[in-house]
Length: 381
Image 1 (cartoon, rainbow, N blue to C red):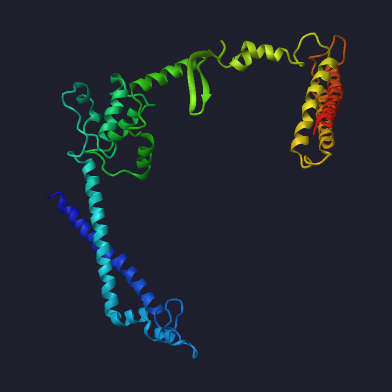
Image 2: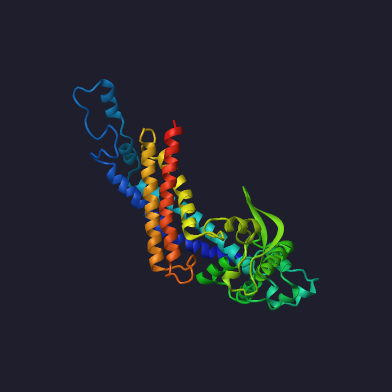
């Protein structure tokens, strides 16, 4: 009772302050404005009673206009004293509700830093009882179940002196400053850091999850990663481990993936005209151009704005030839500036083989587009 009495007294003072300064004055101002606005000829707040009805109005409308004056009649019945009493009564109710809520909040906050509301750990656990900052931790800092789970996932040798990158270290910094016999008022920055740094119970991992995460990071540091297949609800781990990093951890050219270093991928890429061994530059360009020109006219013919007209195939042919020309011009600019020497013969100028491949790419692209146009014209509907 001696602890609760000062709280009640402070609650009464706060309630009187709210009654005098805010609630009553605000309510009186609102009622005064309504009283002024709801009197006289104001159409915005009166219904059918502010003006006289027209001469040719029906009898029912005229009778309603004479009797329907709810706002003005209420103001006349209450009067000035009634308005003041109503405002004071509303102020009393508001001040009481705010005072009670403030007192309850203060009692709960006080209980968080008092001895009965603090987290009391089991005395029979000698390991915990020897650690000073874990004794009487306020519930406003961390809940009991969260603390127990935090201690469960942290090794016992780290309880007294936890590492700086752990949650337990953050708890130690707050528990050594705030609590019974220490500071009981927390600044806004400390409160913000408390809510950001300390986790909830759901955020903490159990021992199995912690071991799984540590094993995953260990594999990642060794350059290994579990092989997973994407699925409709996430990833499906196959149990295989891929060595994706080479001997040099920071060498990007040693990164290995199934798509790039798999046997099927290597065979597929090696059979492309650009990488196939034994071909001359003009053969590479002709094959690449024919393949691209053949399928380029399809989207313009089937999806273009003139797809339902007899000229659809001709428009597709023109669009395909235009794209082949644009790509060929870009390839010539690339060969003239970068000068790749991949297809050069001994004694040739730099980029001679690449430019030859691009020239034949243009010829092959036009030929492939013309062949596709002929097929569409002859066999198309």
